[in-house]
Image 1 (cartoon, helix red, strand yellow):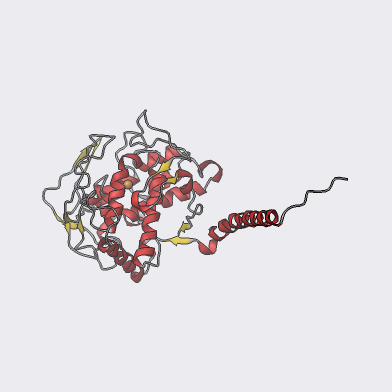
Image 2: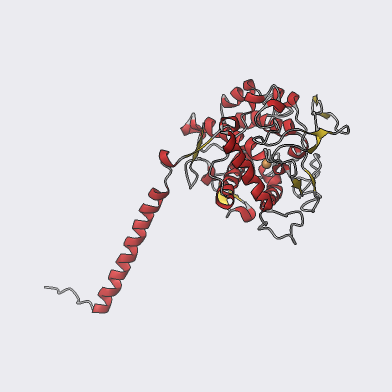
Length: 367
Ligand SMILES: [Cu+2]
């Protein structure tokens, strides 16, 4: 009969330590996803601006102002125009603009970007709510009378002063009349807001390099030009319903950026929101300097999330386009394992990590 070889006490000790390690790893692997999993009781609810109580709206704009007073994490030597934590977000947007607009990364990248903003407000500025959204069709008749832009203390400020130099915009097959302001915003919570980055020209001269003024320091007032023509033509209920009725991701992206929904359509709901506020918000690179930027993109994210959840099987992981602006033929197709960059705001993230607002550490829904 063969006898089992006797093991020395040292061997026994080593193997039990090894076993303990394995068990600990297994326990962690099981426990962590459970503790981090997004259950309904833990899910944050993002609400429409007008749905929030006046005090809640004020706490949001207070937190935004707090971000404008906090020191940046980006180096001012490398980014001379970055003077605050708020500017960290603006510069990160500028740095990624040529990859995350009119491309396959538009929806995924901005989902993470707005989430990082919400997290920063909560963790660094004591905000206890969640990111609000700007539900465009509710306020298309008169932006100046909306709770977002009525210039009250519980708004996001309102129109800028009248700037006689602002001109209508001609593009494609139509002309957009000028807005009603165009100058400095002098009322509401952001009346003294100074912006530091941009402005960038609307003509995209290069698709591969960040144009001038890059990250130069250019302090000036925050300006707006409310434009009811744009919001009523491009952000109305009909277009939002058409967006949600999109049959596939290509269709969804088309309506998002073009109306009528053809490649020659002028503005979709995305551009519509930007041009409804004009001035600062119209800047493709530096638009996050308008505090309404995050609420506009929160609405875009909401519509994407709603559209995705209506057909889990076909839409949850649907992607289309490349990692470059206007999807040039040489662009790399966006896949679930494509990496997105967020500079000092976050570690690089895979597209897969943002496809579900209740997965990979994200845990929110919308009213
Ligand atoms: Cu953007």
